[in-house]
Image 1 (cartoon, one colour):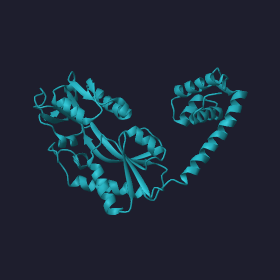
Image 2 (cartoon, rainbow, N blue to C red):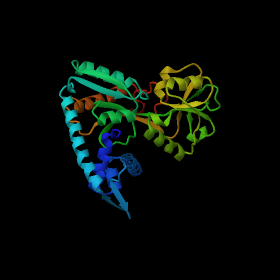
Image 3 (cartoon, one colour):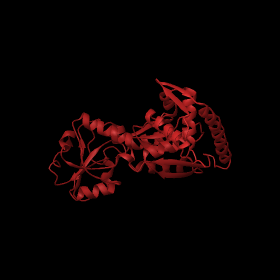
Image 4 (cartoon, rainbow, N blue to C red):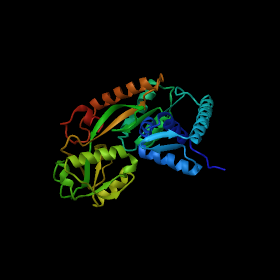
Length: 321
C-alpha cells in the first residue's frame, strides 16, 4: 500500500505534464524550480516509476505519468468539491470578520481599528488573530483571514497591500552605552556592537530587506543573541548585553536605564500596511480597508512627535509614535 500523496504534488505533476518544462511549471505554481524538480523526483522514487523523461533539456511524459495525471486531476476535482461542500456551512464574511496582525507592529493600530468597527460597524463580529507576516499572507491567500496588518515588503502576487504607517527604526541601548550621548546614529557606527535580534524565520522577506539596507549603509550587524519577543530584547538591553533595533513606539514600554536613538539614514524604516486578497470582492473588506486607512491618517495628524524623537519627519512617518 502506497503512502498518501499530498494534493500539492498532484498540482506539480499536472503543471509539468501540461507545460513539459520544469521552469515554466515552477513559475506557474509559484515555487522554486529546484524544489519542484526535487519533489517530483522524490515522488517518482516513492512510486517506483518515472513520470517524466528528461533528456537534453527536453521533458516528455511517460505512460505511467499520463495515468498518474489522469487520476490526479480527478483527485483535485474531488478535493475542490469537498471544499465547496464545506463552505456551505461556513459563516459568511459579513457574519464574522477575521483580522490578522503581526506582533511586531505598533499595537495602537489595533485600538484604532477596534474603535472604527465599534463606531461604524457596531453589528460586525470581529476576530483578531496574532501571526507573523508570512503566516498572514498564507492565511489571506487561503481565505482563512480577510484582512491583515503586515510588515512590508512582501512577496505574494495574490495579495494587495496599502501603506498605513512608516516608522523609523531606532536603536534601544543602555543609557551608559558609549553611543548614548548621540541623538542620531549612522548605521556604520554599530559595527562591532553586540546586537540582540529576532530570528529570520519570523519574517524572512523583511529580515533580508533590512539586512540589505544595513549592508548598503556599511553596517554588518554583530548578532550575539536572538529573541522571540520585544520584551526579551528590552530586558537584555537593560542588562547591558547589547543593543536592539526596534520601533520607537516601544518607548512607551521604556524600562529604566534604556534610551532610544534614531538612525540618520532615512531608508532604515519599518513600513506597516493593510493587506487583503486581490480577488476578494467582499462588500465588507474593500470599504473596511478604505475606512481603516482614513482613520489611521486622521489619528496620525493628531499624534505627531508623541515620543519626543524629533519632528523633522513627514506626518506619515511619526504619526502613531
